[in-house]
Image (tube, rainbow, N blue to C red; front, side):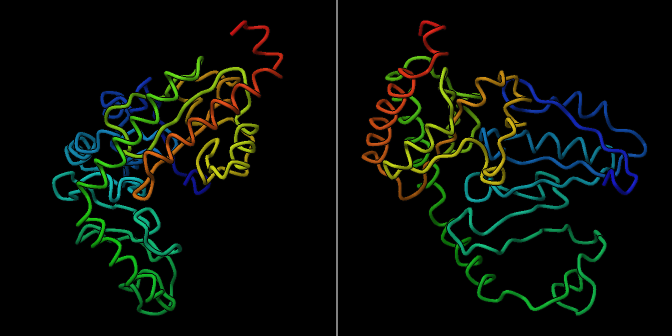
Length: 280
């Protein structure tokens, strides 16, 4: 939007990964037209105070959009109670087909057409609709709602077990952002004195998939802007892994992963000059 001449205000986050509501309200002016916030962060799993943000937006007559891709299937979303005007979601996060998503737009809200031409999708996005993807997304949403309570409990318990095992069995590790009010299956952990890329490659040889940031930034070597905003030093950012669990993850998978991590971390620290200097 800045490229089109709009003024954009960026808000910082605290050590808990959340924006400051007082800072948000103070940033609103009579020219503010939109507040856009991620419902849940895809790297550290932090859930933003969406209900409170929605109240502030409504109070000042400002449109409120939230990126709910990570939230879908993991948190209850009520667009009316949360005063959400626009909500973005994606099918693949709830085990639906890739390449299809949805944008909720509050009734009565007029936005510019994304693609001009035919009358598809209420004239907002012309072009042949991905019917198979849409039906698949709908079925995935139905299954996700049916399994919601079990999914959240299953992923939270396994995630907590994973974090506890790593922090207790591998020294000089810590969790980024609080465990509470977090994406059920997300664990973002820093392993001091080693490179995350090296861990990623070694774990891959064990058949374990992890990431050093979000999937959207997997090809970038630039330090994570999320962890930078969180206040994590650059050298520690490079030693950070994002581990996630899902519906098909088992306790045995966690045990196997922790065992492999202990082996990999020990091997990498033994050849790391940084760890020797720190005397870990």
